Image (cartoon, rainbow, N blue to C red):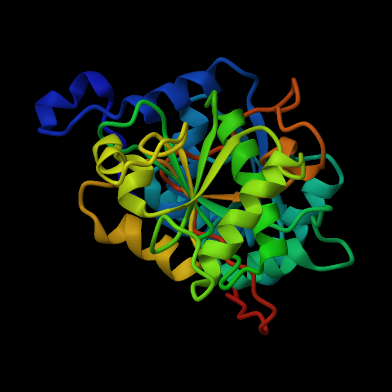
Length: 328
């Protein structure tokens, strides 16, 4: 886990200030603590993130997993878990299912991944009976603090939907819009990315980009301004957009990037050193983002609160493969 450097100390550490990250934490601190079910926090990284978020006043954690392993991890960190609620579960798969049950029953409002395999957690989330499915498809977002951008930059989908169809992308786009609005972006400008800025029948992603934009015109996607297809450079750089003579309220100033598939969403943030992922990746699902759990207007509900654990969220991916248990 990478420790956060306070903005006032950034210059002393030779690092730039993380203004967007700090604003997000400050906004969350102004709201009531979020009750979070933490699935299998049995190592220093995951349990340390829990204590960091709790120390910032962001969450009220419920630890779910083998009590002996949780207490051993806390002892190794020099932390006291005696005042925290612990729900005993014999192994990681049982911890994932119990954590999801806490959210379903209203005893927790969000779900956090601990030291278990992603497929175990997501297997519990997406199960048809007893999971956290909603009317929308679950999708993934990177939330980036990018130099030169006034607001955080969201990139989707990097993990859950590997090769999404046009129908899938409608859900992916709407989830990202809801997330952006919940994080305070206004207006939300969505760039549907492809390899080029013109519609080409030989490039399916350009056709889908044009279709998504027309669906937004018809009210099938709401809460944002969409444009596409756009290439990466002219989606986020006004100079590049001007060179290509693209006149658009989105080109050069997008705050949401929708990529054709998960390979590109994963490669871009990790390959470019000037785009550090300073905010946690988020899996857009009903418990953590209440506004993305329903159709209709995309403004977050009055009770919405940012989900927990800055810099510590995992990249979620859905899988129907057999679970691998971490035995106590």
